[in-house]
Amino acid sequence: MIEVEVEDAAWSASIADVEAVVARAAKAALGVATGTVTVLLSDDETVRDLNARFRGKDRPTNVLSFPAAAIPGADIQPLGDIVLGFGVCADEARAQGRSLSDHLSHLTVHGVLHLLGRDHEDDVEAEAMEAEEREILATLGVADPYLVTT
Image (tube, rainbow, N blue to C red; front, side):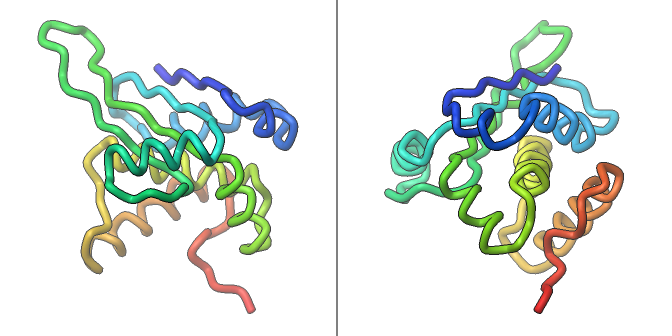
């Protein structure tokens, strides 16, 4: 189950049916995995606050993932929460020459993969995670976000 909460109206104003964009990307990233994911589309200040409190980095970022603890006896386990900040995401999309919808799809996939235990702490992990992101995004019709265009 995917729950999408739009806290910052800028998301809805910028992307038609933003909830469906996020849900589609999250479902694609989940694949056959089961569990619940909550995605909060928020503002940079909220993300900055969460980043400072939970990661010790007092600045906004594009996406944060918070894995959930298992609930004994639950039929469907929570996987966790993902929070995205509008300003950082919009700025990145512009700078990369990508649509905000495609960038949001990428960051949603990225966040869900983190909830599933993927990481990018070293080069080997990063390459594997990026390859998985590329495969998932291709099924959504989203171009390779790591392709450098000049």
